[in-house]
Length: 116
Image (cartoon, rainbow, N blue to C red; front, side):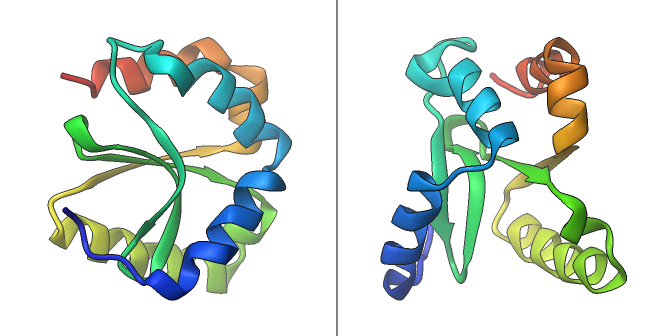
């Protein structure tokens, strides 16, 4: 089991209730084991981070990046986060929200290829 900060539980719940449009679209395609019968969780707490989606069997984190993730502080923060997750043995896939909308099938294909 991965370590997690229990103090983030309420915040993760709020994020699930107020997901972005890109997260909602991708969640409709990932939920209920639709890809290779793999379970995904949304807004999962891992250490001191809340990741958009997590598939334990594949040790895969999926992040949907919005505008804030493309600013200089956002890029730097995400790099630190990705390194920390990699140190836990997890791989991270990042997609822009625009990519999720304009190339949903391509995004799903990329995720599919990373699943066992």
